[in-house]
Length: 473
Image (cartoon, rainbow, N blue to C red; front, side, top):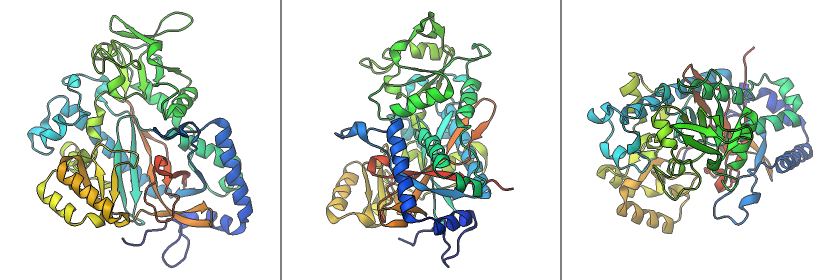
């Protein structure tokens, strides 16, 4: 694997321009001050209850995502280049979803294989021919981006169902401003705290045409035992809307109502943090106690908007990801502005042969996997792990893709031994309304805290950083 690009320091030891003020500050601040502020940040996170659960973990209720106090910095120019690519990608995702649930031109043209749609467990036949408000399916996207050099950003994954992590982006910034006001005085950092205003504007813009001029928005959560419940309650609070569970809603005459102390109140937009399967026991899983009976009939009648739309998962698995450059060309007639990581589809015989011959060099992922689970990082795997994956691939090749081991960029990170480079990725959040696309400058930077590790997922021991985009004067 090649040497990773360091986002702060050039190969000759000079400091890259975005990091000049930070590098000067780091050279003057004593390590014990940094350590004290790291402990202070952890104390604040614990006090306000920013935790997440890992299913099957006996300490599930008590997990904090480690927070690194050294920010990750991008220039305004780098950000503009990235955000143009993000906007292009989400636009294509929306057109793809509209097409595969209606005319299926892309399947007829042979650009995407039919079985990738029809045999995809996230494909919802119930959505065939279903008109969704404003023809928008993905209102909130989390696109995972990695960097390999000063110019090149790759999209690693498209999260088009219910992307999480935005609460950490907002809380990380708030804590940094509280702990390091002097750093903000030295750097013109673009704000992210207007994200919830932008989110609310997006949600209201996609209300059904039958809604009032001031649409009623709610956040639908599975409840307190969900791993991302903190984020659900945080967002509802910041948006100034009700946080509801399925039992708080009911459907009458194809209209959704919320139970309130003043009687039923019509609901126009549901920002749902609940998987398709559990939304409506009359349409999907009959054993779901989390959903709202009749919700899909209200949706089919065009009386409520669900964000994101039902069935978006068919666009964000790792096999469909490999076709995204072709999807962009097909719908937009443009070349992708952000690259895809080269991907071998193990469902194709020649790709499978290559992967089996090069397992020790590649990253192998389950098509529907997430959270860093179910993957093989060849260069770091032992012989037993490689042979286990060889058997899995031979048994069910359609369930896997493989990619080269990218040298993800590194950022300075405050770890036990002091300041050291650690690998990072970035999840910017793209909001698509009926009026426009909104992307706040930054996103959630995830960092692999173990030396040499490429796994940044919080469920696998990764941490987070504040992401700064510098405004030009």
